[in-house]
Length: 349
Image (tube, rainbow, N blue to C red; front, top):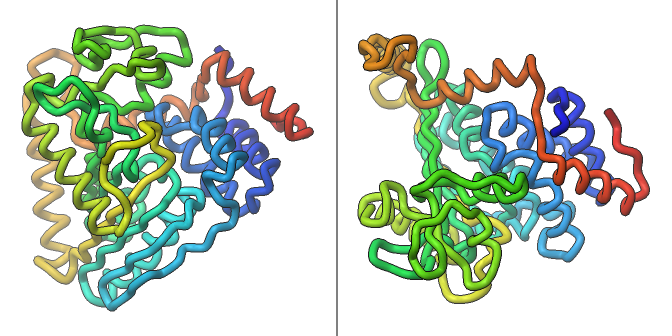
């Protein structure tokens, strides 16, 4: 499997988006988001998404240059329509508005309906934490992507609705970012592209039998992803259900419903808290810094495996992949070549 430097993979991805007439600034926002996800070990939200996004642009599912249409706005609230523009572009536009509002009044919340796939939620939490703001965010699949079955159910009813919470510390921020299913659908797709099996405990086939074959999600009759915690995981499924309700209901978008299972994008909910307006920034950083240090100091139950905090695995992978590069599947690299030929461009290295 080919390995690329982050800079090279960024150039390749950006050039493919620009070949589809995406404005250079927007192409760079999306390409950087995908490469940064790969760097942090989240290949499910990395450059494997390039062909998917380009396919959506080609068939008109996504719109090039779509503005972020403001539907309602107050001192602390933004409700927007993404017009099926590229998700990372629209999500950063929303976040930038909310950053200003949170600094002004202490709290800000915003939604986007009809938004393209926004990628890794952790990148928005990292941006907010860098401004000494706390972040809470979620998305659903705007009515599609129903791959998670309820406990006791034999069909998918909701998507893998993630939740992300971020907070600054005196050093590296705490970034909790996870889907409410046993695994993100994108991780199953990565295994499917590589022709690999997935771990047990992730999937059920269409008859409710445990399987390690990722193909059950991509052929009829479709299989299912287990909720976080296993087949009787009422807490994991319940959390995903409520996130679906909040993202779809508050945004004016869609919650999971009957119809095509393939989700094209997201309904988005972001909430920001300006820390200095509450207990004070110095107090927060001191308390949270002491908390992080206290947890890190817990004696490990396995020698040479220190206790990790949310965000640590991503930062560890980031340092490794900056040096060693990012490896992609042979099939994805072949697809990049096909896309370049179709667009009549040369892939830059």
